[in-house]
Image (cartoon, rainbow, N blue to C red; front, side):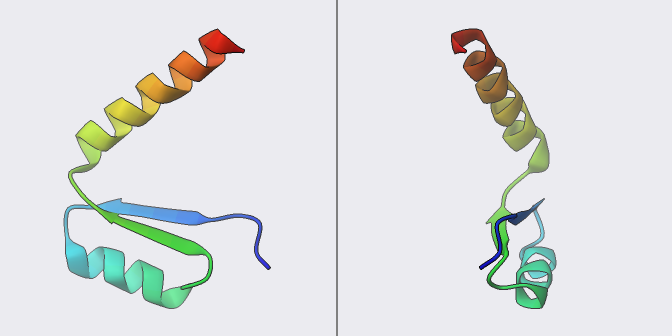
Amino acid sequence: APTVKTVCVDIDPSAVERAVEHQPLQSIGLVTDVEPFLRELTDYLSDSRVRD
């Protein structure tokens, strides 16, 4: 089984669908605006580093 996942974040559902179709067992698709997603991801990663 694959150990690395590919995450596709895009506001266009068809782009996410195409990415996930190519590697359905390795891909995770998220349809959203990428800017708020990246801000939240950065905050989460920064907070987890402070806790470690």
